[in-house]
Amino acid sequence: MAVGPSIEDLHFAMEPSVDEIPGPNSQKLLERQQEVDSSAVAYPKRIPIALEEARGATVRDVDGNTFLDFFAGIGVLNVGHSNPYVLEGTQEQLESVAHTIDFPTEARIDLIDKLREIAPGGLAGSSNVVFGGPSGSDAIEGSIKLAKHNTGRHGLLAFEGSYHGTTAGALSLTAGKKYKKGYSPLLADTVHVPYPYPAQDPDTGDAGALCPADDCCMNDGCARALDAVKRKFEAPYGGHSTPAGIWVEPIQGEGGVIVPPKGFLQGLRDIADDNDAMLIVDEIQTGLGRTGEWFATDHFDVTPDAITMAKALGGTGLPIGAMLYHEKFDTWGPGGHVGTFRGNAPAMVGGLRAIEYIESHNLLAHATELGSYLRDRISEVAETTPEIVDVRGKGLFVGVEFEDADGNPDADIVKAIQTHCYENGVLVWSAGRHGNVLRLIPPLVLTHEQAAFGMDVLGEAVRAVTAEAH
Image 1: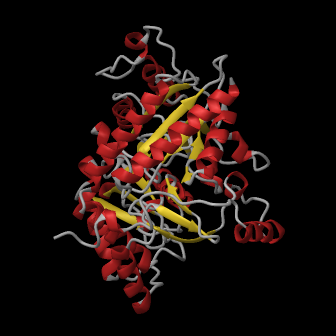
Image 2: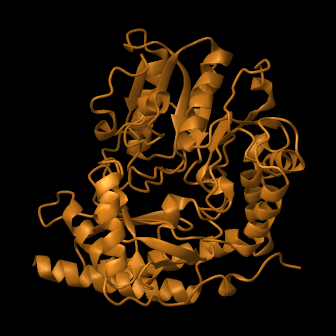
Image 3: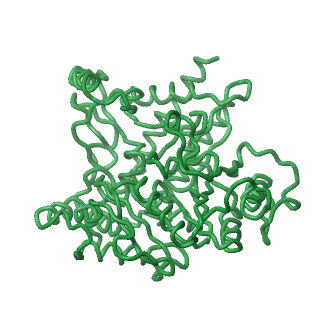
């Protein structure tokens, strides 16, 4: 018997309904925010909306306009806004005990047990979980400590196009220069090497000669990336301290929803093994069903040493960060990694109930099917839209890359499409190293009807914006 209501019953509506936007109440709140909130606030500058309530894959602003949400709080709300099954559990826990530090509770142990059960590859049943601070950045900070503690080394290796957070250690791993401006120096001996980019990497026919993998997938970009990683570990004049670990997104998110070739993660696994380093996979955006598997790593049949989680782990937007790692690396003593909010019991119940809801409603298969539908609909538009140069992703993690007539990344067209969609009741966002990738990350509870309507709006937005550009 399924837990909670069906995905058809979670939403305000199957279609958006917008009138004047931003309406007067939204405008008033936006103006108040501008007066008193931090200048670091970013999202309302692109999408001027003031939220009042949300259900499923729909949000409603303070003027009563209803939007389809293809953004889900940057992939936080995998089982939708205000999922009743999740809310019931979190509310009960909140009324019982909320803040538990790391004293045992059923909520904590049940969530750990479930994460151990669904963990990728050889981590299933052979892993431990540590909670620290309540964000993805905090989970990354914990992973840095874990790698240093277990290897005795301090060098870090990450990838161009990566995003791992903005606290000091996590920011060292994040590749985006705009996030680092004014905050250097960060952690010493942190290096970034190329990440395979199938839509952009030239095919030179050199894969076989370059690739250090035993079973080369014959993709040139993958071969060059793995060769660069290997040299940072093994070249005597590689220029930096030998890394303690490799930090990688199995599918880059902020970098543009870039799906690497099939041999990439296995190649990293082999290099880490050969050099006694840890392979740490950042599943903060891709985890817990987003890509049609519990973790994006599952698509590549690789067992990492550790995975970082946050975002959807809180079930209904409650903040929680965690790291799951192979039990052989559990070498910390008491207090080896701490954080005041490492015992957020309502968030732990939220995570467990979200996983149960995904299982009960077969949302992994739904995400796979609906994600294929979204990419197919966009590919149909791409047939008559030369500005679209690639449509990619896994499950409900979709990227659409745009270029101008001269073959240059076109962020302006993505911004215009985003505005057109907003004006017609569909919320989408951008990504990519140049901001020229449209990113779709709707809740896994998005229905077929909502998906069809959203694609109608998106298709019309693309046609209108590109026609105007011509």
